[in-house]
Length: 132
Image 1 (tube, rainbow, N blue to C red):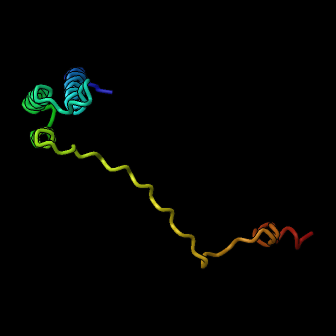
Image 2 (image 1 turned 45 degrees about the horizontal axis):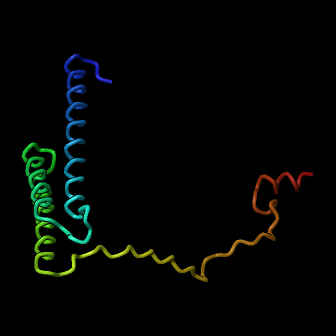
Image 3 (image 1 turned 180 degrees about the vertical axis):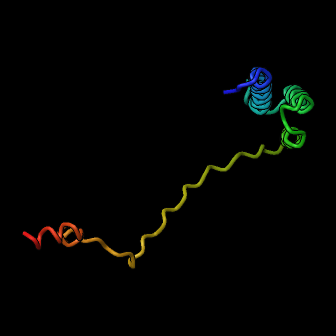
């Protein structure tokens, strides 16, 4: 917890900025999603939706909510998808994630046997057994 008045004020200010940044970032994500999947799914990307998304990305980068390179990369991906649609190509879909292969069990691993009594495994138990 902050101790000084100025530190407490900085905490309050950072909470305000965090909430504002989260709202902006969420709005940008929503606009990008709308641009990629419009209400009429047969139409594909529309230039108007892409324009709104690009505008939001520019504003977020200008405010410092997103890094300028991040905004530029997202704009580039939107524009390339729009150009593919305009040329009549099928938009690129993400490939389904492959399941990781389970590591093969080796035969050289030492096998634990249940036949060994507990007294042989524990030195204290062994010492108690010999005294009795």
